Image 1 (cartoon, one colour):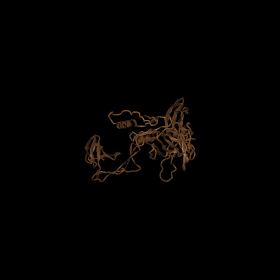
Image 2 (cartoon, rainbow, N blue to C red):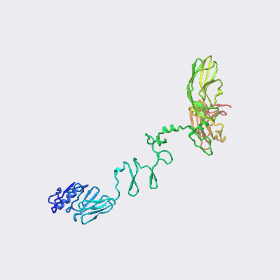
Image 3 (cartoon, rainbow, N blue to C red):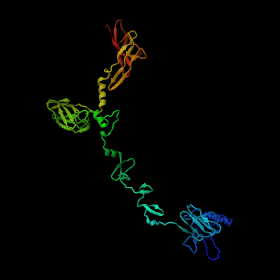
Image 4 (tube, rainbow, N blue to C red):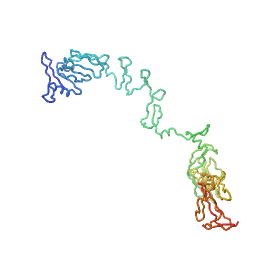
Length: 470
């Protein structure tokens, strides 16, 4: 701070404290004071006056010999020193009106928040309106003036204004889940990516697993794609009911239990509750059973019903939609001689069927669809022809196009010694396979040629291994 001492006795010479020295002593006094002012009057500067009125008001001395344009900030008031007549000019910081200068040294302040005169020795400001004491309102109080100069508390003891705008007023709202109420979080551990669930007081967060538990969906709750019309089968459960089959996929293993009895392990499967192809198909489980007696010298079939009860019966054909066949057991003289697992096993059932067909039937011609008729285009040219058709290998169909060597099609020939020719277009009529060696036939003899077709449509020919008189 810069302190200036002034003696106010009558007709006495005023004495000013020396300014701090800045720069060379040879500088003019005027220049040194200007430099000092720039140095000392940077930022917020408070002037303290020591005189007869010290402690009551802030008195501003006449600073006749200072340079104009230096600003002294007193709180929110910016005071400008003027060299003419020692007048003090000023303006409230942030005020909207420029002050007017009076020759008597007083400054009139015109501002939207305060008006008054600043005399040469003190300031007197008249503040319009009614002052509001800060002790009248608690913390977090929001004030609103519905009428001029009459502020009132809008919300007390709340950190957030909660309300609904109606016209120019904000009306209070009720917290809850009823119509037109505000909803709040009613859960101490709600986290990001939670699903929201209503409680009696608001919302709580639920994880995906918790949502599944809450909903407990079944196959009847899941829709399937539908086409034209209005199909009645439009749920996963209905799809299972109409396309699934009774059977088991784990357990049900039969074994000798000793003394003419058998044991059956626990298992699971799908079964219907009635002997109806369209009855609901249910997942079920049965418990292990031991010591099941088998009649001496009989063959018994082992079943399990929809209640999980194991039973034996000599009639194989009791198997139904609500009674699953597990296997067969044979007793000879009170001793179990054979146990076999049978019935419809559901695990990998489609794959098992494909393997069964491949291993039992191999590659076969589609006899129902027909086609693949072997022939030739004429006796003179010996061209080979095959009509279009299909081959089945396991559960896979192979479409075979028509074949004709009179065009671009060809075939390969083989003997016991291996491949004989490629790109043949006419079947040979002069040789046969003589122990792996092609040999020319004797005149007026017959031979056999074997033609085969592969799933990719290739045609191959195999020479016969002899020649014949007839």
